[in-house]
View 1 (cartoon, rainbow, N blue to C red):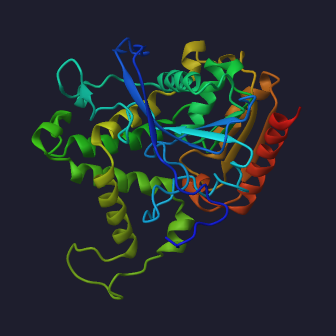
View 2 (spheres, one colour):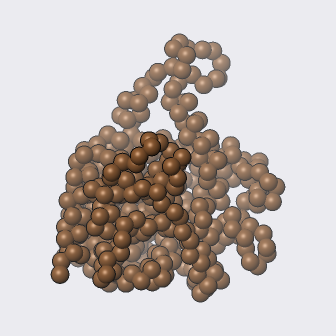
View 3 (tube, rainbow, N blue to C red):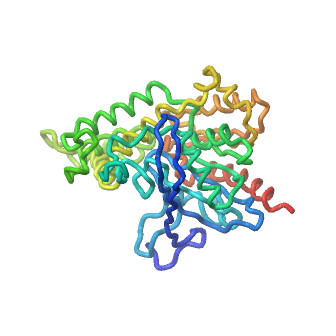
Amino acid sequence: MPDALPADNVGLVTPRSMTFREPLALASGAVLSDYTLAYETYGELNAARSNAILLCHALSSNHHAAGFHSMEDRKPGWWDSCVGPGKPIDTRHFFVVCSNNLGGCHGSTGPASINPATGKPYGRDFPDIVVKDWVRSQARLADALGIERWAAVVGGSLGGMQALQWSIDFPERLAHAVVIAAAPRLSAQNIAFNEVARTAIKSDPDFHDGNFYEHNVIPERGLRLARMLGHITYLSDDLMHAKFGRELQAGSPTTGYEMEFQVESYLRYQGSKFAREFDANTYLLMTKTLDHFDPARDFNNDFTQALKHVRAKFLVISFASDWRFSPARSREIVRSLLDNNLDVVYAAIEANEGHDAFLMPIPQYTKVFSAYLQQVARQVSAP
């Protein structure tokens, strides 16, 4: 990391946490007697408390969305390309909040946390979570921060689904929803990918039916395989060809089953890195939460009806090369919003980066994103 931080970076940030003593009743019927949410904030809340934006993270991300934790830290937040002065989510105008989802493994209460009933980690006994539970826990965080209404709730992938759920469950508490590279529900193919990843983890001998904490091990092999599979689905074929092609590690083919291609080396590196940083039970929980997301289920499987009380204005963005959450899925959201006579801007971005495009500073994408949020900024600053 350079000695001086870039001018468009939020700079050094300190993670915070908040513990809630009021029990949280979950959609599953289980109750968390208390829980903690880890979060970060960027920018300043204005006097009217009208300029707050909630960022909702995707499957394997967390509350560290922008900036650095220290001058020695070489890993910026996961959405550093979009959060900061002069960036689409401009911290000169907005107070930005990002929390680690309940059930996470980066400071929020989750499977690795101590179960007060047993004095041991929850493990597989941690209750099932749905997106509605995340939204309710985030609403309590907003209450504690003195935020009655978000200027916008913003997210990509699973985060976009949270933004959508926010608009349904708390229609009066957000003015805008930004839904990027998301879908109204998972396809059977997506559920299948998630199940293969979960099977890889559960088949690891070190998994111990989710109680690996007591054995002082982690199911590293299973986590590596899960991440390798997931990473393939996040990238497009064009991007993988551009980055790796069929390049060999040693420049010429070898015999046997050893690693030969650069893409193999890349996937193994990503898998090993992920296994050191992420909790296996959290991965199982998060993928199941993703599988079960389906707001239409509570409205006779009619997605248009699920949006009938929504009041927010929407920006919906998709990417042409995203085959996991294709543009057709974003158009489903747009059609149902329009069927409810809601205000929606839709942008279909030509980009070859695949699903992970929403994390990248692609010019056409950032231009649309910035233009929309500049309008929001003008609204919250108007007298």
